Image (cartoon, rainbow, N blue to C red):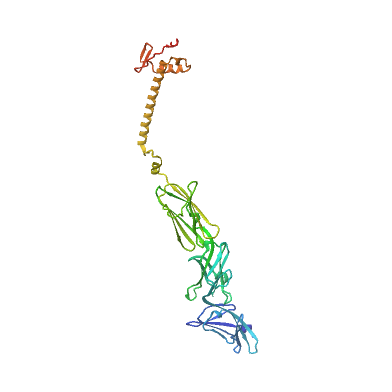
Length: 429
């Protein structure tokens, strides 16, 4: 008998609304949706009296002694490899073929654990700096798409089909993890593992756990925090700090610092300052420090604590802006400065410059007259050495308006009365 007479032919009929039959080659795979009806036939065209047996790999209890392997309905446990064996009447095996059945079913049996502990809690507490691994196990085929959320925001997406492929043993959950390294205040929150594969258009399923981290006070958004506030005299300045901590923090000290200016602002009855604390989302707490009727620049310090070390100390400065009003209050005199532009400024500069030149000339003439009078009234000046040259130059520049009259000279009709009894130097003219 020819070899082809003994080849096994596998037929699969997927029964939904209209059953259909197709020829299968060895090693073929078929995708079936759970809840539907399907059948697979195995026969030999050249052996009418042959016996057909179906077995499932990995399941020694499964034995189907019929040409037609029937699933009604298809269940997720039907997922696996099935081998069809054709034997003759004497029990001799003629041929066999294997068919892989892949059963699509929605995600189910989701669980979440922390650091490989039993998944029995919805809350987990750890200390600052610890490493935490959140593990999410979920069943479903094809392997689901998993999204990790923290406080309603997506932090990780994991496509488990890319990780595990499509040929995993049925009944084994797919695992995905989210790692928190060096846990801090910002890592505290509600973590959600959400998984879905859209089989039968079912919605994703999810599970959550709240991670609590004990942490000392930390300033939120420290890089964006201003440390100097500006104000005009008499303004109100409101300073805001948002602090993360667990347990929540409270103000332990609020002081004005600096030599001779240090004082506490937490005293009752301080009308110039006020403090308000408000809880925000999660472990955040907002501190509002109000300064009323600011009159001068000041430096301040606030310390918050929650019983864990170290405490958080914040230093800030209120800077008083100096303007005309402030200068008036401080000195009483503020020079007025007028603005001028274009040709107006140029004309003003000419006028001012001319006045300066004329004024300087007048001062020079007066000085010359005074010096000449000094020369006539004080003959001792003739014996001052080189100074006599100066007077001679002055006489050359401004000669007498009238000639000598009894030892007097008249310059510009202004006489200098000389009443000295000392004889004049014989070289003088």
